[in-house]
Image (cartoon, rainbow, N blue to C red; front, side, top):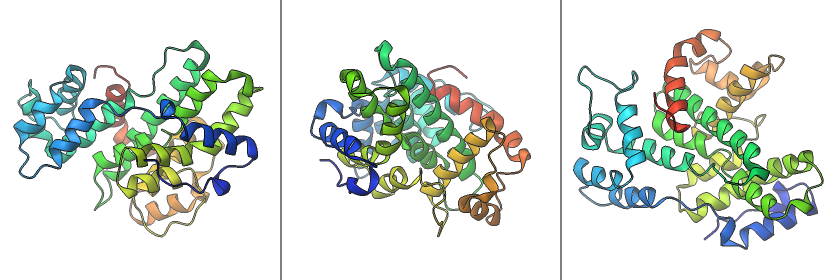
Length: 288
């Protein structure tokens, strides 16, 4: 069931309103959460779930299993003895860290298409998702009270609402007069459609809050939560490629600075660069 969205406030014109209504009316546009992700959630919500029980569900997907073992042996998590089984990876990472990482890996695979018409834009959306996710993980790792792996998943979902717009545009290319018009539609609808997707998947309200708010980069920040971290990651990623962007003007950057995490200091990027690069490789489907 789709989450309710007040799309009269979040879409800018009748064109976007019409597309939003057509997309949410058709299940064909709803990304399908992979079976391994569903079975992991079911297992984790079972009382007394064990490492071996969760490992049994994950190892049904060989690709996810292989990537989790890579992550468990990465510099961020590794110990002296490498692990070579999924049960060993779950034991090292812990149940909830494993779940969040595995969910991010499976969800990252949704940003793929065989259509030449939208392939480039889908790849761009995937790259942005991976970068936001990895930087969210790095930022949350410096903040007490936030789980870096949960922040990773929040960051990955930040632009998941772009997927149904791109799929819709592939089926209705005549409706978009230019790339600019499609880009405007994506910007207007990725938040409301992200809410629709995560609501349909029955994700917690904090995830829905993130996709609703993270694009509102100049909003007032009352507390540093996962939504704020995702917004900061989006800004930090933009500043890396847009040298003229002054991120110090944004409230979320100032709030983080007051909390002891200064994203305007280039030493932050240097300090986390290796870990960010490792996560980007895993979420991009590559080997560390």
